[in-house]
Amino acid sequence: MKMYVLVNKDLDMSVGKTAGQVAHSVVDYLDNIKYEVEIQACHYWKDRCDQTKIILGVDTKTMKKYENHHLAYPVYDLGKTELEPHTLTCICMGVISSDEARFLKRYRLL
Image (cartoon, rainbow, N blue to C red; front, side, top):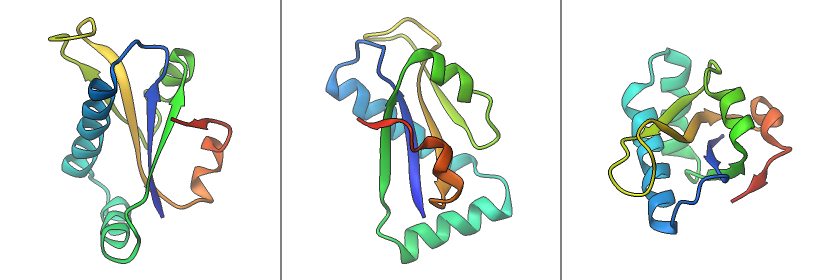
């Protein structure tokens, strides 16, 4: 079980901005998980796994593709610093097994 986060690599975000957006996506995921299976997976990941987070850089087209995916927890920037308001920066895909994450294997680590 690992947590997967997609980051829009087409944006010109600084390292600090990117780290902040990834953190927002993880917190949003943890605050908003609804389904019992997600809650159980998250508890298992926190208690029994090493809390691995896989951060993948993807292009804008791919971000839009997964924006409404059933596993997705998208993050939109408020536009206060580096980006325009409502820019899709990250998508936390949650804590999933490697088998469930096989559709993400084609993307590169950030």
